[in-house]
Image (cartoon, rainbow, N blue to C red; front, side, top):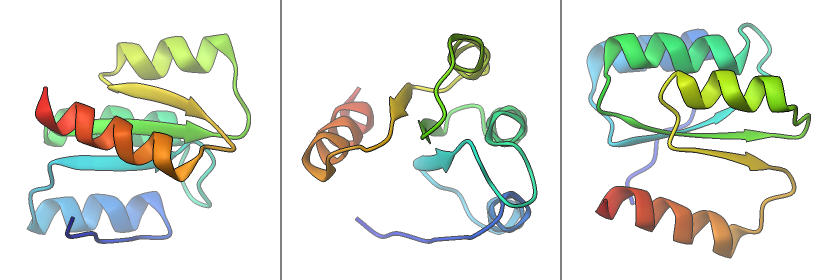
Length: 94
């Protein structure tokens, strides 16, 4: 995989303006924007991008909102790297 990384939601949105991505891994807790809001903004910018959300602070309300905004998966930390790679492969091949 070719991977880009960012530290903030705003950095992610700026990169999305310049480049197309197949998949985004998004943490719910970001320093500048809530991951739920980022998922929603990405959905508007690129509705076909696969969005996998990871959180260390799970809640049914957040999971529902995130999935309703087009996330392909909602994972709870700690996430095993093997499981994450399998999830990515599965979602990219759907």
